Length: 180
Figure 1 (cartoon, rainbow, N blue to C red):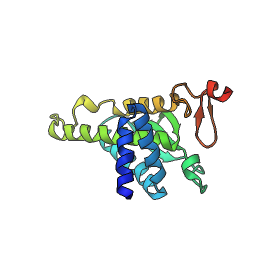
Figure 2: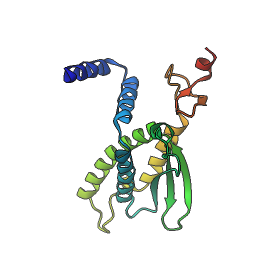
Figure 3: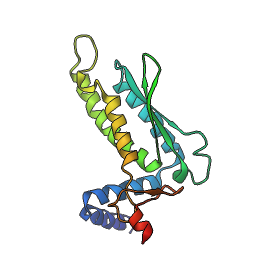
């Protein structure tokens, strides 16, 4: 019976608009994520971005914001800091803070893109041993995605308006929904 409910749920999700279906999938995934799995994903993103940034001047570093994961309600309050670092100078060029939902979105984006980039670079090495220029600005591209995720928080009621208010529980609302 449990599998039948899951199949029916998947049928309903498949009929939803793409944006809503993606949101449902991410919420469901974050609900079943354990703390250990979360920390593993943070470490995995650091490994993946380091591999892709090998031979490049910039790379991304992900870390859990200290103290944001110390509560029993860690999924609601945890924050992940994404920092773009210039490897040669050690200077932090940009930094953004994400909630768990944003982090899961970014994790999915980066791991799927990196798999393709790493597969392509392993088959098309340049004479100097560095991967193709396809990955030359990967850290900047991914940091742009982080900025997009953190800037474009949408209202969780109407899923249409830009969120003007973000509660401590990480739910975001537009002013129109708050007024109603």
